[in-house]
Image (cartoon, rainbow, N blue to C red; front, side, top):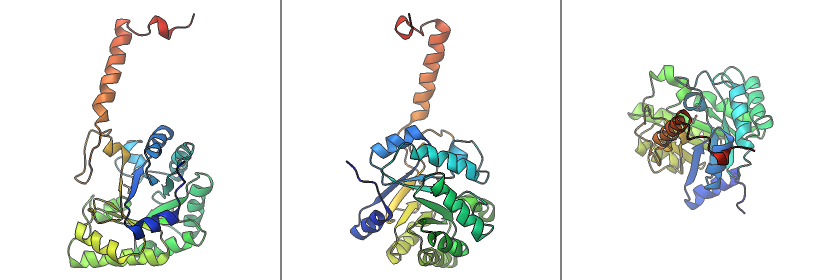
Length: 267
Ligand code: KIV
C-alpha cells in the first residue's frame, strides 16, 4: 500500500532529483481519482473561487470556502500531502489572525500545511505560522491575490531589478521556514537560478522545467474550462465536450421517452 506523503519526502525528492507532482483539487470525487493515480501533493487552491465558484479572480474566496473544500478533499483520505491555500485577507492584516486562520485550515479543514502568497513582505507571517508547527508553502512571482498591484496576470521577474527582487523573496521565505515555494509566472532561467540556490523544493507553474516540481489546476489539465487556456497549461483531456454530449443525450432521451427504460424502474 502507498505510504502517506510528508514534508520529509519533498526534501528527499529534491535531494535525489525526483520531480514533485502537484495538482489542485477541491472536492471528494476528483481527489479520489487524482490520489489514486499517485499524485505527490494536492493543493486546495483558492483558484476554487474561479474554476468552481465562477468568480473573476481569487479575491472573494473566504476562510469558510477554504475549510469547506479542504474538508471535502480530506474525506477522500488522500495519501498525497494536502496543502490548503490561505485566502485573501486571512493572513495580511495581523499575525494573530494569520496564526488563527492557518490553525483553522489544519484543525477544522484537516490540511497538513498551508500556502501563502508573498516574499519578503510575508516572511514574518511564515515564521509565525511555522512556529506553530504548521508547514508553510510560500508562493512568489505572479501571485494572483496581488492582481491589482501587478496590473493583471503578468509574467514577473523580467529584467535585472525585478529578478533580484524575486531572488530576495525566495531567500526570505526559505529563511522564514517555508518547506517549499511555488514559483509562478517567471522566466525559466530565473526559476532555474532560484531552484539551484534554495535548499527547499521549488514548485513551478509557468516557470519552466528546472523547478523541483510542477503544479497545475485540475480543471485546466482536464479541459473542463473551455474559455481560456494559459500558455503554460498542457491539457491532458478535453472533458467539456464529453460532458456536453452526455447531457445532450440525456435531454434527448427524456424528451423522446427513451429514458427511463424498464430496467431503471422499480416494481
Ligand atoms: O490557487 C491555486 O490553485 C494556486 C496554484 C495555481 C499555484 O495557487
